[in-house]
Length: 222
Ligand SMILES: [Zn+2]
Image 1: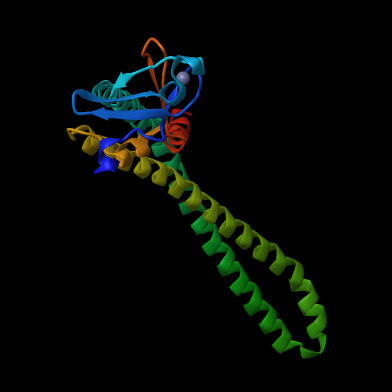
Image 2 (image 1 turned 180 degrees about the vertical axis):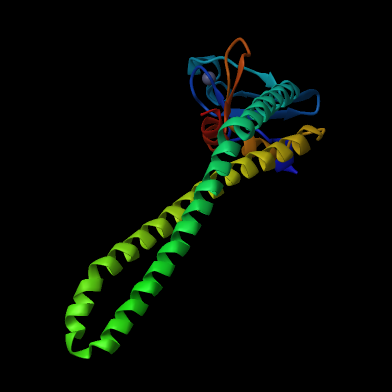
């Protein structure tokens, strides 16, 4: 019950003295928060009440989530249209080309092995010279094959990463929509989105976006 009653506890701070704000609940007054220093020591703390209603915070958080959601939605659609989608398609084409190259290199290696074997059978005494002759050629195609294979792995990983970012943002957007439909936010809802909230003396509420979401946003906004 307590948890549900104080969804902002631990995340809300006085903008002026930095102290955590204290939740006040009183049957006669609506739920709210006051500066922790002021709550303990009154005006002698050097700070003032900074009292803010829980309802007002809910409204601010709601608006904040809407803003972040809309900006993420815009960015993810730009990202899908321009940057990421094109990159994933380019990667796919490159991988297809590399696959063909790799097949070719493998064929060449089979051919080389066959030629080497035929020559060795025909002239067993010169086996070492024959081996030496083909060694350089074999190494060349083996290295080409290895390079093509590692490029394919790199491109696959790059595409996966881009698809993953898109998926992560889409799942965040789903969570936002779910939270926005609620009548009251829980501590868990707040902690998913908000890193910190500060309240100034003139009741200006500042919300700081969760770092993990900000990082995702930074990636897609490029
Ligand atoms: Zn204070």
